[in-house]
Image (cartoon, rainbow, N blue to C red; front, side, top):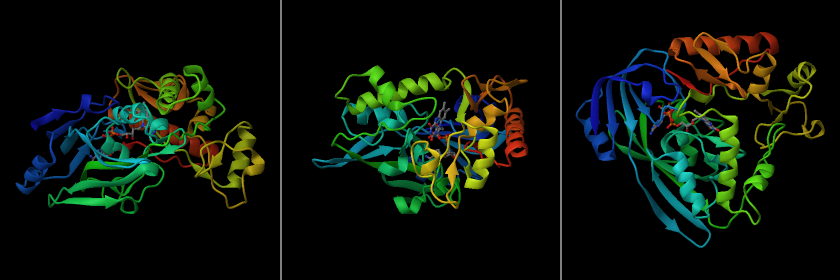
Amino acid sequence: MKLQENADLTSYNTLRVPARAAKLVRLRSEKKLKELIKSGFFESDTLPLGDGSNLLFVKKNIGSAIKNEILGSEIVKETKETVLIKVSSGQNWHELVLFATKNNWSGLENMAYIPGTVGGAAVGNIAAYGQNQEDVFESLTAIDLKTGKLEKFLKSDCRFSYRESIFKRELKDKYFVTTVTYLLSKTPQYDVSYHSRYESLADELAKVATPPYSIHDIARAVTALRQYKLPDWNTVGTAGSFFKNPLVGKRQLKKLLNAIPELQYYPAEKLSYLPPDEMGNDSFQLKVPAGRLLEELGWKDKKIGNVGTFERHALVIINYGGTGREIYEFSEMMREDVKKNFGIDLEYEVRII
Ligand SMILES: Cc1cc2nc3c(=O)[nH]c(=O)nc-3n(C[C@H](O)[C@H](O)[C@H](O)COP(=O)(O)OP(=O)(O)OC[C@H]3O[C@@H](n4cnc5c(N)ncnc54)[C@H](O)[C@@H]3O)c2cc1C
């Protein structure tokens, strides 16, 4: 464990926002965390910190933060069909995906090349190309930051929903997730049906590999698509998609289609965009791409002062050396524009601190 006081957090968040933590603990073991809690080390609210790829620090100073550096993984159970793998929460998510796909275990391949830790992935219930973290999630362990007690949470306890879990809501900053257990399949099965107007996973797969495809080929195809459509968070200040894709009713969708005839939409639970005759009844809720709404209003490749949006994606904010406050004000301008023009309240996907 390493402790720093008045620590600079610029390199601990992918937006590269300057903020400071009164105390920053770089944590390498579960045991150490229990000891620190029991000794009363954390006086104020404590922020569990993964790779900071889903955060915006608006405050210049926060209390304590625990940077997760707990590493390791173990196979808990293996059968002919499945592998149950328990992973320490500080492990890099993409490395876990590569480990699984190289072993031909399926369940994570469409979520390749998402930044962040395994703990952050569970807390944010990440998803991509039609695959969701919660689909392979079995359980997690987390330490109560008040008592130091280790507890197990089953899937139903975590209350996963679209980019949400109980640890982002009711239990925010109350528990530190230490391990996550996933159930992966050893029978190669994959789904590359995801497509949008702009990209097709099946087409990309055909470009990067030849049949019969392996699980690892899927991860390679996803990585290639993502490397093209998203900025490199190692060199550019970004937190990926800033807002969630909004859900709208059919009536509202019709209004949106008047403004943007080619706007795509899909049922909340489904992977791909649907043709109009498969949209279901009037009460049906449909998801529309927030990025396309923003693009229509001129927010793609836009720059104001030190903040802008990515040249290929209006939902992705880029920090050109601004403060957290500047980024927040920029994002609020985007939100207000969407509200004024389309009557939709965009919800933040990124956590604002
Ligand atoms: C370029 C780019 C592309 C992205 N693409 C996607 C995508 O396709 N799909 C997607 O779903 N997300 C995407 N994201 C968002 C982000 O990568 C994920 O949300 C990621 O899982 C966050 O992990 P992290 O370790 O960085 O978490 P952090 O940003 O450090 O933390 C996020 C939240 O989780 C909490 N947290 C983190 N670790 C713990 C822990 N151990 N215990 C308790 N709470 C914890 C934090 O307190 C915070 O509330 C993208 C981000 C970027 C920059």
